[in-house]
Image (tube, rainbow, N blue to C red; front, side):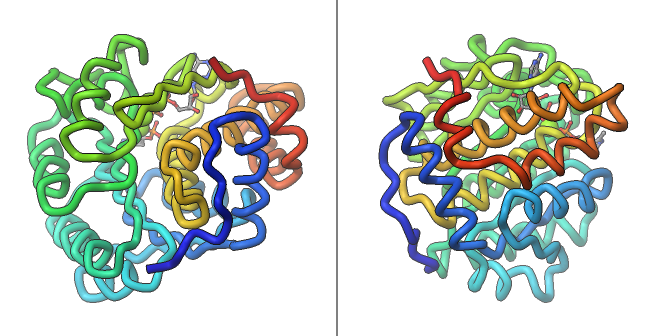
Length: 273
Ligand SMILES: Nc1ncnc2c1ncn2[C@@H]1O[C@H](COP(=O)(O)OP(=O)(O)O)[C@@H](O)[C@H]1O
Ligand SMILES: Cc1ncsc1CCOP(=O)(O)O
Ligand SMILES: [Mg+2]
């Protein structure tokens, strides 16, 4: 297991700033099994924030890679037989090595096969974090999902489902939306930073899940890790919005702002409740 390098254990602005410092110092290897829409964007997001991505999604290598990675992202956005088999291998490797893994149940509820894949993975070994939009989190608790990969529910409406999943699996559940809600089943943290432009580019949620995998590699408290990823991503988005003319320049500016974001700016700018 890659031991968290920094004992960050408070969900307060200072703790989130320390988490970003830990990410930059640790530069953890983050294995991503993600969808074909967002793979390059996700890798660039991790690099800009300070982590080290590796996109290993074949069944031959996924288990071994999960054994040496600091964190693993499993994102079911464009599943194929091969990548689904690789996800099973990666989760097994994560279980053996104690590597934290993050599930992003993209499109759960809206499409049956991927919903079964998500449930099957959850039944094998509990993730550190489940991260999804509200409709996807509701779907894991029996809901019907969103409009394809888009959420149609508010994050607060998914909190009963998120809390139930957190208790059942002993994990953190991060529900994204205008106000992100993160819970470990006992504590709930709301982060109200962000930009509506995040909904005008594909892969924002997917990139956020990858960042959560990175933060779980360096921060022991998974509630702090998931909240730190959310704070860092949404604060960078606010800065990117100021520099952007629309979705295209926003996406580019978001990478620049992730790279530029300082821990002190996280402490100053995050809006928690
Ligand atoms: N209306 C909004 N205003 C500001 N930020 C938002 C809004 N909707 C989503 N976000 C942000 O966009 C990112 C992705 O969330 P979301 O769109 O819910 O996920 P997904 O892309 O998986 O559907 C999160 O960081 C969230 O904070
Ligand atoms: C458009 C699309 N279709 C399948 S996966 C995917 C990307 C979804 O990305 P996100 O959930 O981050 O918006
Ligand atoms: Mg998504």
